[in-house]
Image 1 (cartoon, rainbow, N blue to C red):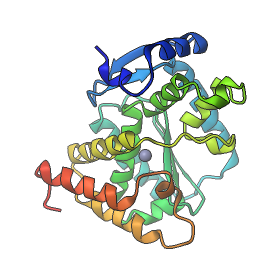
Image 2 (cartoon, rainbow, N blue to C red):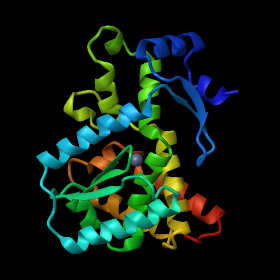
Image 3 (tube, rainbow, N blue to C red):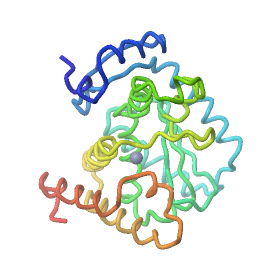
Amino acid sequence: MCQACWGTGLTRRRALFAVGAAAAVAACETNPVTGRNQLILVNEGELSQMALQAWAQQRQQTPAWRNAAQQARLERVGMNIARAANAANLAWEFVIFDRPDLNAWVLPGGKVGFYRGMMELTATDDQLATVLGHEVAHVIGRHAAERYSREVAQQSALRLAGAVTDSQIALAALGLGSQIGLSLPFSREQETEADVFGVNFMHASGYDVRQAITFWQRMQAANTGSRPPEMLSTHPEPSNRIATLRNYINERGWGPV
Ligand SMILES: [Zn+2]
């Protein structure tokens, strides 16, 4: 029934053990938007609760950029994308943190963090919609819950040794692992899914999807320093993702690009 989940390399016995250990809800679920089977071993209410705490902490630690025009722009484009994703009912919050980083991230439940550097890089609303489409797709795709579930199911050596707790794994799954020295990289599958569904949401809300290519080219061009922008170092190689997006956009007849 749930071949795709069981086929990810874990055995049924190990997965069941993980369920008992985590006292979590075990399920192999089909995502209604993406149609993909996912192994979900976490109560999403608990994960959302952690996300809310992490969000509050982040807002306390990093000042917001006081730029009313850019804030309004982010919220307007963000809600357009959320509506296109059929997710306008989530408690979306959009904050621009006053840092030069070329990065953006999202927490389950719809808390979206942007950095000033990323806002400045997105020259048009279409480019901004590219980033927002990607982040909203991570929420719709339940990628944090999936990352958490995979990690728990794999019974990492660190976890078995008691060196990390389930709540630390949850933080890492939320993308906040750097705070505790445990990183859970995005899987290639999740990243591609976020790119593709992001472009779908862009198209549904009337943005120019060809500018997704422009945006990633700009990110690539900005990658000239000794340290790549964070969104590049934790994400797939830009030329690969540009090629994948280009194919997808042309296949859908939204190009040529
Ligand atoms: Zn991503």
